[in-house]
Length: 132
Image (cartoon, rainbow, N blue to C red; front, side, top):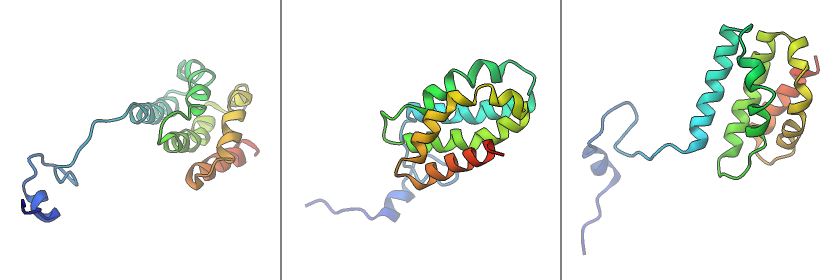
């Protein structure tokens, strides 16, 4: 029978380097790219609140991806979206943001009713912010 190698020995033989890599990796999943895009979109809107980014993406793309639940880690993407909403709303101004708020309500409420506490908390904070 082949001798089983311990985790420490496997980690020593890692061919890749980098912080916390340990030689274990996997390909990125599509939702992770989308998650990064939400972060990027938030930062672009904060940096350029008068640009077209808000009007192009918030009424169409964000409600669409916030409603997707056909992958294992959809709660993490929802959490990112709802955590980003207050910063986006502050950047563009509440008046402009509230023009599109109705489009976000259904996915926001669905997240409030899910069983993932982090996503629920993020959606709850977004609702509290929007209710101010």
